[in-house]
Amino acid sequence: MTTHNTAPSQHTPDPVDRPSTPVLLSTLWVAILLADALRGIHETLRPGFVRELAEDGTVYGNEVTDASLGVYGVVLGFLCCLVVASRVLPRRPNRWVNGIGAVMMSSGILVTWPKDPDDLIFGALMLAGALAVLVISVRWSDRPAVDSTEIPPGARQYSTSGQNHLRP
Image (cartoon, rainbow, N blue to C red):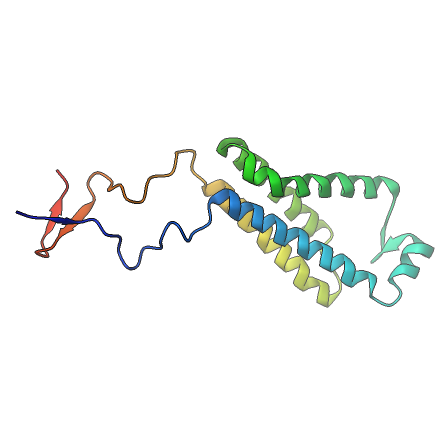
């Protein structure tokens, strides 16, 4: 009699240790928004920043208007909502909303690409996070997750005798 070993391989990560896709997306949004907030705090500490903003109404030569602040506020509010939406929305709308948010964040970063060398680090981190959200959203399947203990049809099972057997 042949017994089948259904124990997971040593190289397969334990599914309990991996965060779910919604948790991963939400965590990425928190990291992106935190990097953006830290960049803003860091920027206000730059000598001459407040004077440039107050006197000229510009930041790095870009005019700051009420309309641009309104647009930035709406976009930032939407991105903040993604932290929660990533966890509560069903899979299909979650994929779309996170993909749209990642494209919005990436385009915003690229349009306002920092000219200050130390801000490049923040910009690169936020862009990498937004691209990670986009890749995860695109690759997130519409099919329900498969139970890791279930052996897919046609998968090889190994017996204790060391011979490979195909599942009937």
